[in-house]
Image (cartoon, rainbow, N blue to C red; front, side):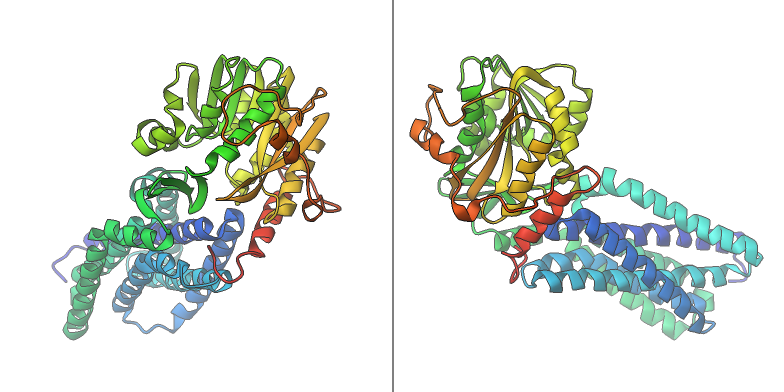
Length: 517
C-alpha cells in the first residue's frame, strides 16, 4: 500500500462517497414509487418513506460511533448489506404484494426503508473517519457531505428521466444492488493492505456470490416479471411495459381483451361499450352543435370510436399524458380491433400532454369536452378533478358547450363519486346532472354531465348505432336508488385540499381489508 500515492487513496474514497450517496437515494425512490403503485396516494407514500429514511439515517449515524477502528472492513460490510437489502427491495415488494394485506405490506415498505436508512447513516460517518487522514475535520466534513449530496442530486435526475422509463423499478433495484456491492469490492481491493487476508478473502467471496445471484436476477428479470404478472392477473398477459408515467398491461382471454394501468383495469372488450357509450353519447345527444370535441384521457381510442358515430362532429382532439397509450391504440392489433381504428381517422388529432397543462395553454373553444381520466388514486390525478380544473374546462367550452366526466364507482366509492359531483357544481356550472351505468367489469359506474345552459339529458334522441343505450335506458341512468343517494356534508375537491383523494382511498379501503388488490 505504501507504493500507492496518497492522491489515489483520496480519489478512491471520493468515488466511494459519490456512489454511496447515489445508490441510497435510488433505493428510497424505488421503494416510494413501488409502494405508490401498489397502495396509491403517492404523497402519503413518499412522505412516509422520506421520514423513515431520514430518521433511520440519524439512528445509523449515532451507532457509527460504536464501530471499532477497522473502518475500511466495516465500510465494505455496510456496502454489502446495503447492496443486498437495496438491490432486493423491489423484488421483495413485488413478491409480497400478493401475499400480504395493506397494513402488513405498508409495514414491509417501512422496514426495508428503515434498514436502508440505518445503513446509509453508517456510511457517512465511516467515510468521514476514513478521510480524516487526508484533510482536517472542517474540510473533511465539507467534502464528504457535498459529494454525498451531489450523488443524491444525480440520483434524483437519473431516476425519473432514464432509470424508471427505460429500465423499470425491478431492473433498477437489482442493478444498483450490484453497483453497491461492486463498490464494496472496489474498496476491498484498493485498500487491501489495510484489511486482514482472512477477512478480505471472506468478504470477497461473499460479495462475488451476491453479485452472481443479482446478475442472475437481472438476466431473468423479464421471465420473473412475466410470472408475477401472470399470477396477479386471471387472464394471460400479452403486453407489459413500464413507461415514464405508469405500468401498462394488456391481457387476453378468448374474446376478452383488457387494459390495466398500474394494475387497475381500464376496460374489458366484452362490456366497455356500456361505459363509453354512456360517457360519449349522452352528452352528444344534448349538444346543439358538437363540431369540436375535446377528450381528456381516453388515449386507447374507445371513447373516440363512440364520438365519431355522430356525423356532426368535425374534429376530435384527444389529450393523453402517455404517448405509449396512443402507440398501443394505433399499433396493437387487438386494441385496434376494439377501437375500430378510431385513432387513424382523419378527424382525430392526438396530443401527448398533461390535461391541466393543455387547458392552461389552449386557445380554442370546444363544443363538447369529455374527461375520461384515471381514477383519483393519487394526488397527481386527483388535481384533475378539482374546482380549479373544472373552471379551466369551463373557460374552454363554447357558449352552449357540454362537459361530462367519468366519476368512479357510485357503489364502491360512493363518497368519491358525490365529491366529484359536488366539485363540478361548486366550480360554477349552472346545470349539473349525475348519472350512472352498470358495467359488469367495473360495477355500477358514475358520470357527471354539466353545462351552463338548460338541457334535458334524460331525453335521448341521438340516432346512431349502439349496443347499450336507447331512449328508455338513458332515462334510467339518471335515477339513483336510495343506497346510492348523496351523503350529507360532502366536500368539494380543492387543488390545495384534495378531499377527493381521501374519500377515494377511504372508500376503497372498505372493500380491500383482506388483500391489497
